[in-house]
Image 1: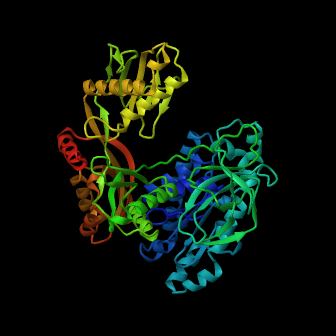
Image 2: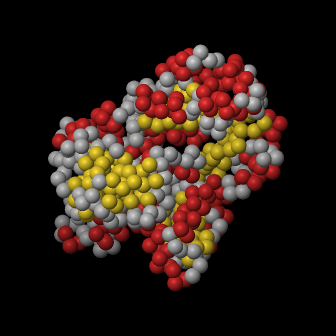
Image 3: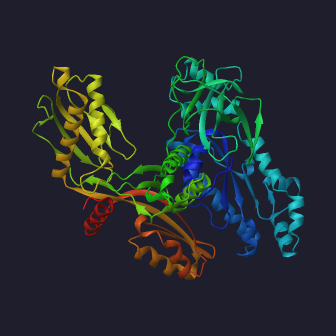
Length: 599
């Protein structure tokens, strides 16, 4: 499985990690460890995927930077140390054994994919070569000899075969990471065994929409054997589907096969409305089975565009296509602006959205898109506690609650709900709450957090504590609408007293430039409300690290190119949500309300 390194496709990396047991992390020999490298390694360690390292573009160290053999070795050492620092820190977080990489252990390879050569230290010793020999090949214009004597496929395949685990070896320790059922239950033992004769269990990681065979659900076959004609279902739903085809992916090609066994990555045709993250089982499900742990993403959608068909008659088709692509890529979110009727599509970045628009057109709908819009979140400025009861519309139920912005206190018990925007609902009421009432209260919580009072942006990073609750003894007086309305309005009253402000998404940015352009690059970042966090010398190059608001990033590429004569290499990735400066809040709220038709 090959995944793009660009931050806008970090979701693809995260989903791929669920399907594999080992990963080759590719690092540029000149740029070294960048912001996105950390994201890739974090995804790997979190999913218990063992990494090995390939340091690529070594030719640039020789031809462009003209480093000596000793300087090249020092550069390699620095990259390996940086990678191991990341692996070690994350291994502690996830309670893993240390998977540090080392040339001596044959877990690091060096080379040039462009010129198709590579080596490991083991190979160099076997061939009785030194790095100075490689430098001479470039000096003598004998690059083709390198690819003949040190073909790139050999060290890469050797690392995979010798260092990365097989599915049978990996599943015993990976199961607890990707599946939260009871390990010693029949289902837990089935997943750990990776046995083709056990019950069928598949974790879907990717949906292929552009195929002559139709929609293909691609995933890791953790247990059992899947065949054409197999009865399968999206667990825990009871609806059964018949497998129409089973495919094996060979690079970009798909090969239809009669069956595949546990440990493989399979394509399944015949499931209706599959989504990345679904759990597929057969008719017979082992006792104790629960769905796979939800795939969690490091980055989140922060940019939105409005999309409309060029021909109005194609609107129904557009809605259908938006549903297809958002199922295939959960990092895309489709919604409708209720005030304006616009179809909105949110993604991780501009490139992510550009590719999504291309996918829409390849699925048969010509579209037009608006300029990008940044997503904001609303948040209370201060903690507010309600001392008076807030009544339901019929006056038969009552609640007291408090709201807390960005609460840092540990929360271990009585958590009723957490949502993707960082909001938490905590119940501290001594009252005994029936399950039906609890569900209604949670629905009211979601309703309140969906659109804040300032400009109908989602509320984020807010803790709601239910301090006390009175419910009518008459079931008819505590219906869902009554409780939902009570909770929503109580939260909104607290928001009004807490005062609300906005959170804005922040990108971390990393720029590598020749040293003479340092002033220009720091000036570009600072002029966009950005902050410089670190400046590091890397040979003749300098790497500048900092952060800046997503709203200030749209023409960043043009600015960097013009100020550095095209010599800047940069990455941006979502880092965090920050409070919008007071002097900016009012104008942003006015702009959002006008766009949404709320003004």
